[in-house]
Image 1 (cartoon, rainbow, N blue to C red):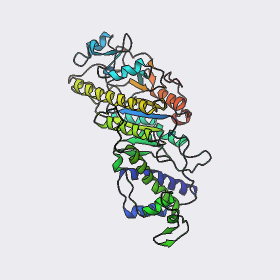
Image 2 (cartoon, rainbow, N blue to C red):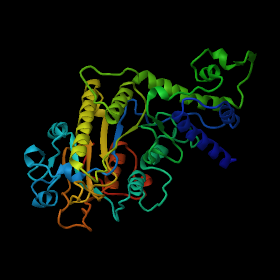
Image 3 (tube, helix red, strand yellow):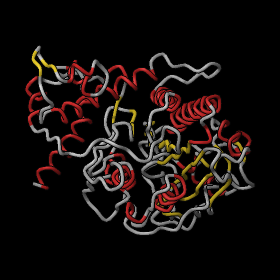
Image 4 (tube, helix red, strand yellow):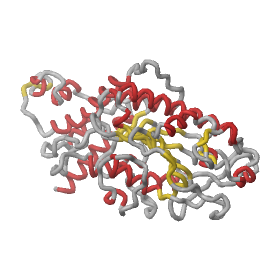
Length: 433
């Protein structure tokens, strides 16, 4: 019986992701979902909530961002020697120290750095690095390098441990807002064993249009209480289908919530840039302003696989990233929500130290991570990797990315990290809290 209940709950949780991915659901599936309901499954409760508490925003830079042209070691002659066609002139950079500087298009991040709200963690990677996009992304998103086929992500395991329901209620269904990813697919990082967060590309497309919506609404306290007792014109007592009717309606309620808080949202005096990253962060800001209970938001910016003619494309990506981030933090400050938010950026790997024959860079290893927000202990964390003491032409990592994750989990999300990451990693000095 326990296995059947566990399977049922898993079906329900993953079903919410399915509902988020499609605007309608066939009648046969609608009825099949109802048929496996069990009123003994625990009620939906979430602890804790992001409505008034801390929020994490993860920004994925997909494709392998060139860390050496993001945080530039301009004082190292080797940088200029091995990158003659793609190097940056030190006069155009925004200096952080006497040895490293930000890309010319990252001017807004310099302002955050000077205000003590940006931490730059240098040389982040992991042992025995993999240069495959897919495998390395799996490693970063699962935080389980030892598993060839990971079944869950590090944020998803946080949801499993901290957001699956009230303490003492192991069967409790999760709040559908616990995590929200902006994009066409749900990243592995957000997938748990028990909790499956929402993934949406456009709020207007995230709708549930199942059968018998009126009774769903009544079961969720949206319509008249009498509607819960009367279906299709006949009086009735609550049936074994009611729990699943209620669960199915979660998707409709959450889609209504998201549409309500994001529709036509544009804060005064803040202009988000066009494109995925600008629109993604605008939606995140709208949902934070709308008071959703979401603990973790996830957005992505792609295009960083710069094997050829890197400078033009990478320069453009840095500009789009900086504009979107600047608009987001300006928006949050206007909302008076900035103190509650931490932003973390990552990419699946950096690029090789030397440029290639096509004016680009090939897959590498270590790269910097950014952490942003008022809770950050601003500054440079760790030493920049050597450009001459290399591992087959690649940088040797200085900080294990799981140390950064452990810090975010323990010091920001108030959750023990060992259970989620499999071992206790040394915390990085990146947060004030």
